[in-house]
Image 1 (tube, rainbow, N blue to C red):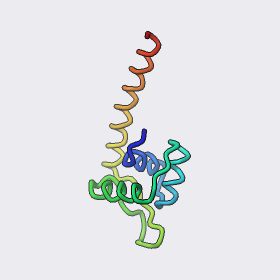
Image 2: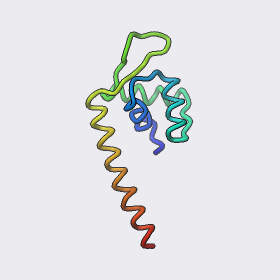
Image 3: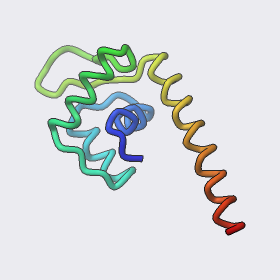
Image 4: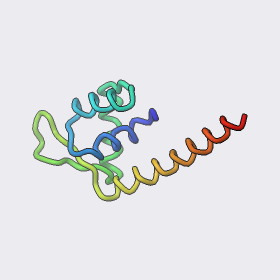
Length: 95
C-alpha cells in the first residue's frame, strides 16, 4: 500500500496524530517515507472530502482524527485490498 491518502487514514485509525507523528507511524507501519509536501497534500484532500478533521486547536502541531465517513471509506478500501490479496495468493499457490 503506497497511496498517501490510505496511509494517512490507516495511521489515524489508531487515534489522533499530528503530521510528524503520522510520518513516523506510516514509515514504521508500511515502510513508506512520505515527505511533508506529500503528507500535507493528502491531509488537505482528506479534510476536503470530510474523511478527517482537526482534533484540536490550530497550534504548531495540529492533530487530526478520522471522521465516521473516513473510517467507513478506509474499511471499504481495506476490504477490497484484502480480497485482491486473497485471490492473488491463491493464484500463486496454483501457478
